[in-house]
Image (tube, helix red, strand yellow):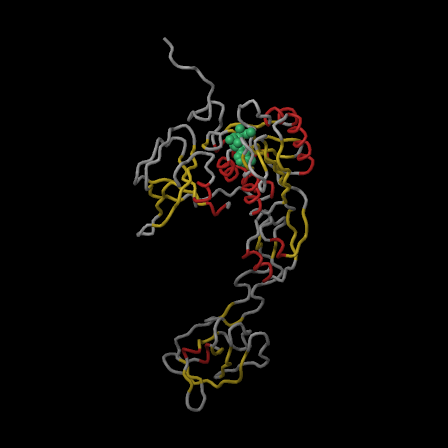
Length: 422
Ligand code: AMP
Ligand code: MG
């Protein structure tokens, strides 16, 4: 007798033949998402976090001329005598910012400040701590010094013509400093990708109003807003869309006319009020709609005209997991930079973690350093995909790969810190 109901694969099953693996999903995203074309020229401070469009070559050497790395005395090494102490006559002081006009001859030295140009006739700077001053004011130096000592050579940091910032590089604070050190005031960067997002669901209510029976507040638009605000994108909040096919078509048409990337949450499961998939099928193309991860399996990826569409699940934790793993890479590609995968660190599990093989799980963890400065990690408690406080309390994902069949206390696991996207 058959005593089991045969069922379609569901969210509860560890394995679903319709879902694709994480690596395959990322490959498809990489194949599909093209960088934005347009560029703009901006003052370098406004380029932070933006993507450089054309390689930057240095217009000159940095430093432009040889200068002193120390406060001390500039001299010619030839003025020193092997195995003896030489006594040199100080002829003046070289300060940073003004050239020392005179030539330094044999048996002479110049008092020099850090950053001052190296005076003509000298080839070394002796630290002031390494000289003695005689009663008559002569500078006494031993012979234990070499040509070039304490001199920053011209072009030592950057040579004229050298590429300092590649095309496609995302500009960080050090890059701004390097550009400034070359005297470059403006840079051509790619325009920011435009990202439109909306929530779906008749149960959703705006914050600030009393909660009606059966309703929930729309939290996804807030976590999405927060995550997008950390990235160099322009955002368009399209609000909440009712669970109706017509409303779905309307918002997708509007969004595709304005945005490079459209993100929705909810409405991608197999329930009767899930209208995202049919609307996408009608208006665009679907590349995949299920990924073998937990939480976040139902994730629709496709395209409407020139806009990329990512339909994230409704559950709040699944929204943040799929955003971090798939939306961030898509935005990197749109922005015109290459994919940066987040680093994984090894950590010792502090507790048991149940898991079945078949998909990659992102449990929420709290990692800390143990007494030997090694990472250890525990879970935030209940791991349901609706438990959003698990995300706000955690500082990392505990990433359990497809084949993992559970973790015992003391086992090593991979963790991925949130700071790369939060
Ligand atoms: P769905 O995929 O639309 O069936 O949504 C799955 C679950 O996520 C349901 O319990 C929804 O109520 C919840 N959910 C959907 N959208 C949101 C949202 N914007 N904020 C908070 N929870 C949501
Ligand atoms: Mg829904």
